[in-house]
Amino acid sequence: MKNLIINSCICDTRKMQEEAYKDYESVIINAEVLLVGSRSKEILERLPIIQNCGITVELADEDVQANVVNGDFEITASAAVQENSLLVVNGCLKVEAGAENALKAYKMILVAGSLQIPKSLNGFLNKIQINGVTELYPDGYTVLGETLMIDRLFTLRAEQEGRYYVSSETVICDESTDLKKLIEKQVRIATPKLVLPECVVEDSAAIFDLQTEYVVVPEGMKLIYGDAELNDILLQEHGGNLFVYGDLTADRTADMGSLAEKIDRLEVMGTVTVTKAQKEDFLKIGAIYKELKVIKGGRLLSDKLRVKVDQTLLDHCPEGIEICDVLKVVVDSAVKPEDILEKLTLCDCGSVICSPEQESAVAIVSEDVGRIGSSKEFNLLDKIKSTKLVNAESYVM
Image (tube, rainbow, N blue to C red):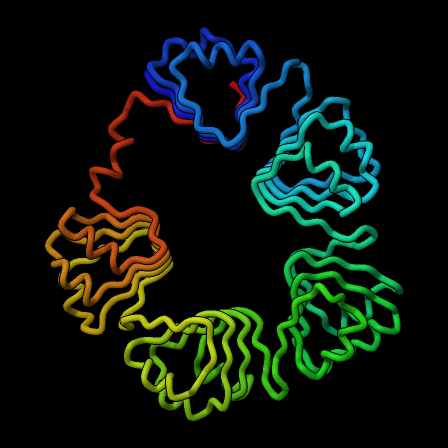
């Protein structure tokens, strides 16, 4: 092998031997974190090595213990840490209140993810390098996760004078949820956002602090938490007054005129997606939404490994084709660019193989597509038979 490509989260070069790599014409290291020592740093400079690394950490002593964690990790108050250690976390790092001694022992902490740390320990942030979000949670609070759904079971299980932290949002779906039980227990919840029915706003003030952003569901409206599909089943189950906290996609086979007659009020906090044929009837509803997305409609092809689009397929789908969540889409070279613009929609696909003449048209009808181009471009690496490829979470050279 003449070439070496290393793709890893953490690449540790401290023990590398120059003899093992000097015969390569080129070595490419793609890593989130590159660990080097004084000796390996000189080797990396001498050899034809290309380094594409987010963070490079030089450790003067090669005996410094480097603890690499692939996944979430927690530093507890009772954690025993070897002095001058290095911690690399490829995931979420949670620090428990009272973990001062453990944090002091670490030489450095690298986090390729998010960090949760008590406000009282924010003085240690100078030794933590993070490429994600840092959350400072109140001391004495139990961290529950990103989302909390408050229901009857939670009100029963919550501890007396319980203190809880929710990193993203808390949701009260049901108007019948009895918040008075939480008030009696003197429960407090710290959360950035609260979604709740209008009828329980007054009671919620005793549980949530002033920093909490409120999303209030108007009285008489049914909260639909998460993405939903607009069809007869949704209206039969929840009625015609809907508050959708998420995206709403109309069933492309549904008669929007018939659905509109059953809707009294509709509010959508995200994007509403309808077909061209449904747009006019949908606008008559007078819905409130963040964004309206109009698609061509027609046939839907989704959740497949590979789809080939040729002229015969397009001719048999006069209303168009939408291709979603497909790993590889191949557009036959005989398909005209104007037919692509008129009849094809591509969304959330890994790659689209097409001719150079088709490329601009494909780009216009594509959304969240990884790569667009000819098969020659995508098969370039396949032609490099002399390349050794290493894909690993953690790699020691």
